Image (cartoon, rainbow, N blue to C red; front, side, top):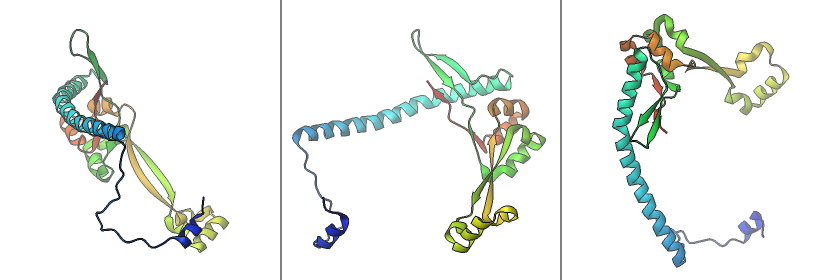
Length: 194
């Protein structure tokens, strides 16, 4: 097999194709049938996914409401058994995973007041500034010394995350009004059926 340099040297210029013109791959008959079957299933999968989502939405909404009502009444559960019929039961699961709107921390602190530290952990990430590796002088300097010049080379980033059992604790700590406000900024991972 020829190496890339010899291929480039011996290559003959190609005629430029129109922008939308693509080369064609002719498939054997058996593979054309496989591709037709694939396209059929792909289309049905899209339709089924839409129907599944539409069927799931009102049931999820109902189960989430029950989960929240129970938690507010002091009966916290993160999973429930949901009977469908005599032989079928599914699990409804609410995970203790939340995505926190990092740019809204001041609003979250206002909502939580003195309880903020009971619900959130502060994580500080330290990383090397990009210009340190791209500037020879800075690269040399960081190699020679680090000590008291730490902040010259590193930047820090603060990231807040919910504490374990946040889903249970925030319902106990915050009023119903504040819980509704909080849900705008600390969004729980989507509950699901299993």
